[in-house]
Amino acid sequence: MAARPSLAIFTIVCALTCIYAFKETRSFSYDKGVVSNLSHCPGRYCGRTKLENGSWSTCGACERGLRRNNRSACEECNDTPEFYDKLYLGFMGLLPLTFHLGCIDAAAKRRTFTREVMALYALAIIEVTIAAVVTLLVTEPYGSFSIRSCKVRKLADWYPLFHNPNPNYEGVLHCTQEAVYPLYSMVFVFYTLCLLVMLMIRPFLSSKLLPGRGKSAIYSALYFLPVLIVIHAVGAGLIYYSFPYMVIILSVVSNAAHFAFQLDQSMPGLLMGCVRDVRNLVILLGHWGLHAYGIVAITQLTEGVLHGSLCALVPLPALFYILTSRFTDPSNIG
Image 1 (cartoon, rainbow, N blue to C red):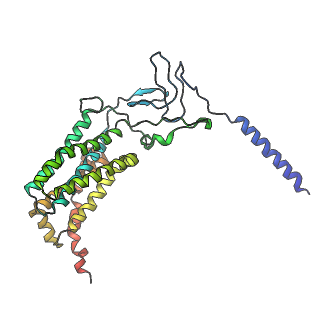
Image 2 (cartoon, helix red, strand yellow):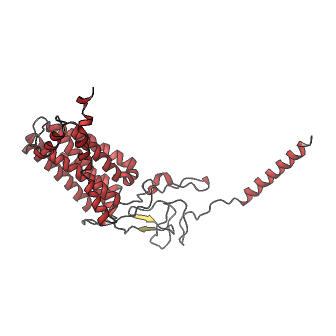
């Protein structure tokens, strides 16, 4: 019986605490609709645009090329891309070029370079270069190779769709915008131009340079370019922060795969194959270039001498494979 008064007192105390907490809880308040004086907006990306009459618009998404500042005003982005941003754009440009070269090499089915294959390689490089130049020219400021951008601050900047606020659960404010303008949209423009330029140039020359087999490289591009567009649409932010490590890992793996397809797996055979065979030498130098690109992207060469010296480690994966090939040769098993 003595436990009942204690239980009653405990219940009363909890009820009083909940009532006090409810009274102290205040709802989020902000000025709705058009305002004469700039006032704060909820969320990370909702802002107000200054109207012609001097007032400020309702809270919402900023126009393209604008981004909310600390006072919730949509202001024009006048930043210039950082060195890391330029390396990211370069990586997005190298992706279709690498796939083009790989598909052409697979379609040719030749272990040596010929004039026809070299011409298709040059054609792919020209196509990607044209697409990249046109993309820069149609990006603000128009007709210039410079870029006016919004600075990337955090991963959430790539996914503003997931940060639309719902103040007081009264309704969602749709403030989705390109907070990393134009790093997100210009990649879509670039991939689309790669596809259009290829369709305008490649079919006519490919049928003459590589009859019968050249069309398979074009068909492959019709698949991998839309796939790259979808991957960029979904994972652009993740790619932005991880591409240096992706470049290094993929270059090491593809380098090992290239050596694994060599018929002679002996140490002298692998070494002489890199020197005598022009195709193997070009592929090896390409892997080394990608590996160095990843090192530069990770370090950003903030300490020039120290970080530049790390590029001397680029040949290490290839040398490691050659030196240990006799231990991993499947013919030695058993």
